[in-house]
Length: 153
Image (cartoon, rainbow, N blue to C red; front, side):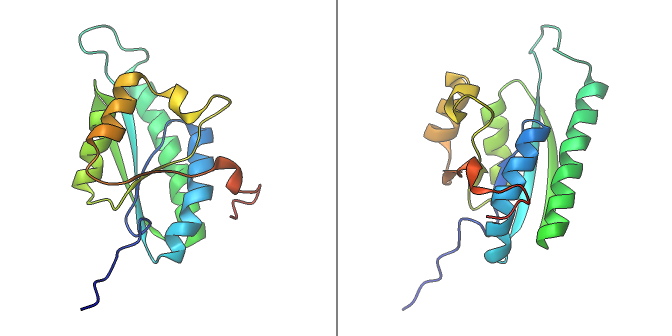
């Protein structure tokens, strides 16, 4: 009996942190998703302070999320893939990402390294622990330099 093995890129969830991250992550992941005839979900988590004052106003942070989702939509259109967006508010970013992945029935959680520091350094120990130790699906880190200036891999 031959069993069908689903590609990691058939229904991945891509957490997006900021505009640069959205550009890089989408440019790197979307061609792989298109090659797998997949569809993508992107999530942006607005971290709530849990009783303390939030770092920025909700409206301002929602505008940032809208910008990230617009970047992702344009990239998805260019790649010819279906895209779903998800905005979450949470005190635990890692848990929110894992919950989004479960609800989207994601085949993997897919990231690219962010900025000048390593990907690992941008997450606190708690978020890193949550994603790696508690994920019920693969967590894939793609090389950010795999996308050239045109977004091709």
